[in-house]
Amino acid sequence: MTDRLPDGYFDDVYADSADPWGMAERWYEHRKYAVTMAMLPDQRYRHAFEPGCSIGMLTERLLERCDRVTSYDVAQAALDTTRNRLGDRGDLVLVRSSLDAAWPGEDVDLVLISEVAYYLSEATLRQVLDRECARLATGATVVAAHWRHPVDDYPLTGDRANAVIGETADLTAMARYLDDDVVVDVFRKGPTESVAVGTGVPGAVRRR
Image 1 (cartoon, rainbow, N blue to C red):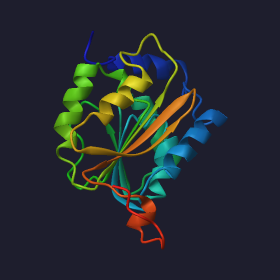
Image 2: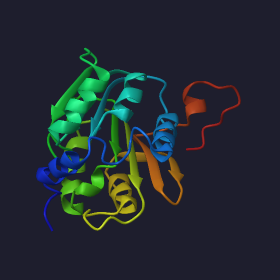
Image 3: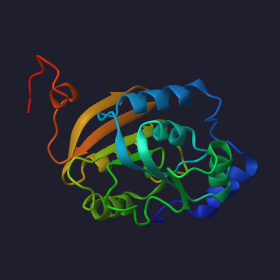
Image 4: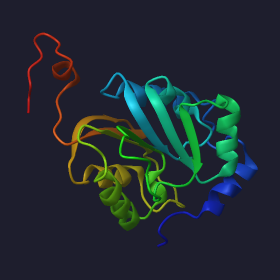
């Protein structure tokens, strides 16, 4: 088993289609993005890291909730489409890179791993998470969202990818959405509390 799918795999995918997964058109994708964004526990974030941004559909939504977004993709065609869609803007940095490379600076307080962790072998994903999550500050949010149907080319299933992320030291589970198609898990680095407790909603009771 290789460490991850090679960059050329994605170059070929984008050579065949500018939007190979139908992210701009499919209701499934738009609904998934809405679910993912609704599950973010904080109203606003300083700096989001999004590995595997593809054509920037989720990136666009992150920019509405974050002061700054750094997005990676291994395919230059995907980055070019994102830039063409969203324009040149000071709050967005696009980098040709991958999840297993070094993540952005230590001010990152949101990591959104959407439809990309299963491109890595389990051993490589474990190494990356142990190395990079240790650099995140206490209180950072980590989100994992993955397709649950099997794909022969992928080293991991979506369920296993989320499970590996959830096994990372110091990540505490906050919320989960699960249906036949997608699983979305939200974790906090370090101790956690409910959104209602954290924002002082009257009557909210701490359960942990």
